[in-house]
Every structure is written in structure tokens, then in C-alpha cells.
Length: 444
Image (cartoon, helix red, strand yellow):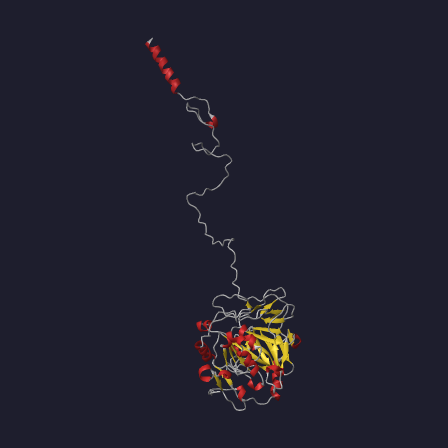
């Protein structure tokens, strides 16, 4: 009995301990621990959930980011700055309203515009001195079909300008137009009376002339005699001395003239003009040719190069303005014994009038009209397109020629051969007296 009980106990232990011979899934054996169904034959289930349909990839550790270059961005919402207008009515601080350029120094900025009358006839007065240092030069007809210059200085202060000649009626428009000091040799009695007239008193103290006692020592009007040169062609001006006297008179104020507009960009146009010829009734002529290398216009007078005796260079400017204006004979502006009649050149406009203008810059030209309805101090000519928009000059120096009609003006796209013309003229020309070298100024 005891032997039978022992045998049963051994059999029970063998049954409990012995593994089952039933095969499991994928060759594994079943235990008493529940097993999940494997999802693939290679990767085994873990306690981290697995996404389905995961593509093959080589994982990059998320904690090691790839460096991204920093871009410099220009905000698209920032508008382009609007250019500050340079004329015709307002000008930035420090900009000369005569040139559209910065004043070269404080002296130029703080002094007043100075208008000086300069002779251009007879030919013996050429070459004149100081033309290339003027900011603006006006050329207009005087009696006999010849021209004279009104040169306006501000940026530069030449010590030898001239020959200085007499005033004309049109100067009584130009000087107030530019709020300028007015320097000239003298005038006829009718013109002097107009200058002294009570209506012009507000700028009468801005007038400087030997006619009123301004001399060499205190005003800068000095005589430089030369053999063969008539007395009336020997007067020259030192602008520094005159500005000093204007300071003592308390009239050397930095006044501005308004009218010209300036812009660096050349407005689009198909009108080219490299050669400009102006004929004043056969008595005198002027030709300007555009120099592509310098961007300037070079002057020829009576078909030969027009030089400046002060610097030895050919007369040049950045802009040419040709103005058609009404001319009226005024014999009353000279003494009764005179055989000539002076001109009233109307540099003002009236409603319904016709006032054409050519403006040349950078080898091209523009057609438009000029306007000056306001004749008050500082109100200079405005140059306009037919739309009323201003014609902008190139920043720099300007020469204004006043003619009776545009029929006396010839614009050409080709350059006339001035070397051949000059050679032919020189072969028949008489000798010209030598230029002054180191003249000694004498009292007038």
C-alpha cells in the first residue's frame, strides 16, 4: 500500500513539470504566460506602440539639428524713399538754387548772388575773364544786333571778371529776379533814373557802379589799360572786394532765386542736338557743341573757340536754355543825341501769350515754354513742358540765350567741323593784342 501511494505521487509530479509537446505559433512553445501575436518575423513587440505602414528610413537623431543659414531679409512693405525736390520752388538746405549743387563752402552759402555785366563786342574784348566761374550766364541783344552777358556768381569768387560794361533795361528784370547784387560800369541817364526811382528803392542799395562812386580800392572796380584797347573795355571787377563792401552796406544776405528745377536723370526724348547755332542778324553768332567725354557744351563765337582768359579753357556749361522773348525798340532809353535804340526785352509772361523755350542737356533737347507771371523779387523763369511739369536741368552751370525768334536757332544732330572753319578764319584774321598777364590795377 505504501509502495502504491509513492508511485502515484511521482506520476503527478512528472505531469505537472513536464513541458507540453504541442507546437506553438512560429515554432514557439506555449507557456502559461499570455503572448501577443507577433507583428512581423524580425521586429518583436515591445511596450512602445508601433505605427502601421512605417516607411523604411535612416533615422536622424532629433536632438542634433542641422544648422540652418540665417537669411538677410528686406521687408517688402518698406517703401522707396521719395527724392527731395530740387526746385522750382523749394530746395534742400545747402543746395544752390542756381546750380542744383551743394555750395562748395560756407562763404558761398552765406553770400548773395552777384550779377556782373560783361562785354562781348567788339571782338577785341575777347577772351573775357571769369566766365567759367559763373553759375548762370544770360546773353541778350543790345543795340546794333550784338550781345552782352549778365553773369551771376555765387559758388565761386573770381578776382578778375570782365571787361565790365554798362547796364541795360533788361538788367532791371534780371537783378531782382535773382535777388542779386548788381555790378556794372555805368548806364544812360534814363536807366540811371530808373535805378534811382523810388519804386526800385528796395533793391537800390544792391547796385554797385563807378557811376555812383564805387572805385577800385573799396569796391573792386579797377582799370587794366592795354595798348590798342579802348578805355571803356578796361574795367574789371574783384568779386571778393565787392562782396566785402556789400557786407559793410548790410545787403550781403544769402537770398535765393526760385525758378529752375534740377534732376540727375535725363528725361526720355528722341530729340538729339549735338550742335547749336544762334545768329544775331549777322553781327555776331554763337555756336555750342556737345562734348561726349565731359558732358559739357563748348562755346564758339564768330566760328572760333571762345576762351576764358582767367583759366585758359574754352567757355563751357552743363545746360543751354534758349528763350524767345518779345523785343521792343526803346529810343527813349538813350540820350537824344544817340543814334541807337535800346531794347525792352520782356522777361515776363501774360495770359494767352506764346513763350517757347529750348532746353538742352546731355546731348538732347526738349521743347516747352517759359513762365514768369510773378515779377517779384526772387521769382526767376520757370521752364515747363506743355503738361505744366518742370523741365529739369542737369545739376551744374547754365547759359541762357534770349532771342527774338526761334528762326535764328539751328539745332543739329551732327557736329560742324570747327577745326576746318577755325583754320580758314585764322588765315585771314589780323593779329590780336596779347592778353593781360600781370596787370597793375589803376583807379578808374
